[in-house]
Structures are given as C-alpha cells and as structure tokens.
Image (cartoon, rainbow, N blue to C red; front, side, top):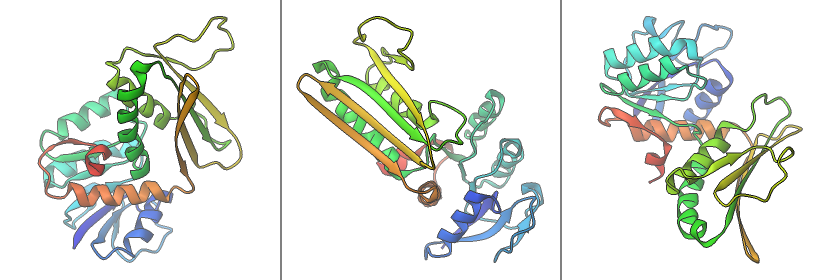
Length: 251
C-alpha cells in the first residue's frame, strides 16, 4: 500500500483525488494539508505542511503557489517524493523546485492527463514523419468561457513538444488578422476558442497536400488530472532524486 499526503486536500482537485483514492486498493491518504477546515475527512488534516507529523511514501500537491516553498522544504527534509501539480509558479519558485530535485524526486508536468501526455508521444512520431514532407501544423484549443488565459498552457506544451522535434526552428503564430501574407513554412499556428462549459479540447492538425491528419484530445471532467496525479504518485515512489514529468509515466 502506498501512503500519500494530500497537499491541498480540501480544494476542488484535492476532493477529487481523495474520492478516487478511496476506490484504489493500492493507494491510501494518510494525511491531508489544508488551511480550510469546513470539510470532513477520513484522515487527519493539518493547516500547514510544517505541522504535519504523519510520514508517507509520496506527496500529491494541488494547492497554491504561495505554499510551495514550505512544501519543497518538507519534501527535502523528510525525503518524500513530490507530485507537484500547482501551477503559476514564479521564476524564483521554479529555481527552488530545481534545487530541491537535486535531493528528492519531484514530478512536475504542464498537464497531468495521461491522455494528453500520450498525445504528446504521438505528436513526436507524427512530426518526425510529416514536417519535412511539407505538412503545415496548427493547434486549436477550446475551453470554457471563464478561462482568462489564452492560449492554454497545454496548447503551448503541445507546440513545444512538436518544436523540440524540429530543433526549435518554428515560430508560433497566435493571430493572423493583422498579417497580409502567405503562411510561413516554419510556423505553428495556435488558436484559442472560449465558450460555454468546455473543460478542455485540444486538436493538432497536420495539413498536407490533398490530405489532413487530425489528432485530438477531449477532457470531459477535471478528474483526468486527478487520475494522472495518482498514477504519477505510484510511479514516483522510490525514484532517485531528479525532475520527472508525465512523459516518464506513459513511457
């Protein structure tokens, strides 16, 4: 049985992770961390990671960026692997993550979905075959009308994944409304759609002469990110210090 500390246990994603782990015979939550106390849990909850007195095999984090420094300090001090799902980290905090990873295993990914990370694997294969054969590459992402950033971090991660295969020689084009010229060969177009309650939809188009290949991923709920985090926790236990990502989990 893998023992987990759920950091941010009373937030939306923390509740989803808790519910999924309750049905998983290989994992159990032995402690939670959250300043909010208006939720009943089957495990002890501490207001801060610094107050936690329960040992575990791995930490799953879905909290806030402000809590990350203390979280990293705890992970290093107790040698507890960390699945870091909190986003919006500053450059200074990212440096702290890299420093901590020299002493303890940390898994950090732009998207925790197993499907998205499998998609990235497929995109690398497709890019190797199609890019040099004249196929243009476009990414279309769709999200709910409450999302404030565009394009999505996942869309950019998909573009980066493709561009790595292309030796980072391609530029990203986000808007063609002010450009009166033909599409450049070495560019990746990225378009954002916002509407309704769309959880997340990412489509990558390889458009060639007389044929088009489309690879698409659709998220129907945020539970996919919780499932990915749990799989990541299972993967990370007993791993050597270093930075890992979901690509390591799906390989």
